[in-house]
Image (spheres, one colour):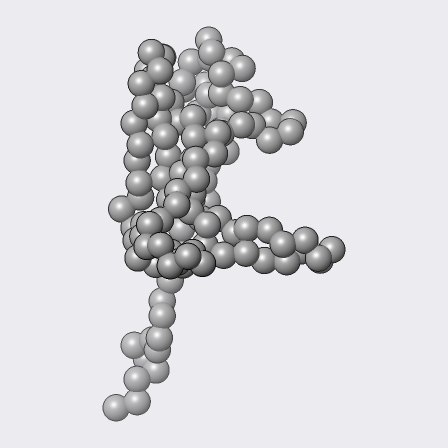
Length: 115
């Protein structure tokens, strides 16, 4: 079967309070763990992840804590391994495409510059 994504690597970027007063942590996904059939693992970090942007912890330690979360299907969702005999082409048809990312323009547009 080869390599498959089994875990997500995340970093805590802050916390927030829910409507009912609970404090929860906010995480950003910064990478993934790939596992092969023999149990070997490869760790990938996104090129855009900059550990210098992660808030320092209370102790002033400048290490960055990365959390690794196991990928599990959400309730009502089927895991890819539930249908191991499904051909990849058919599996691709059943997987909804990811929405296209739109470019972000920051600042004034070319027509807004007063000359």
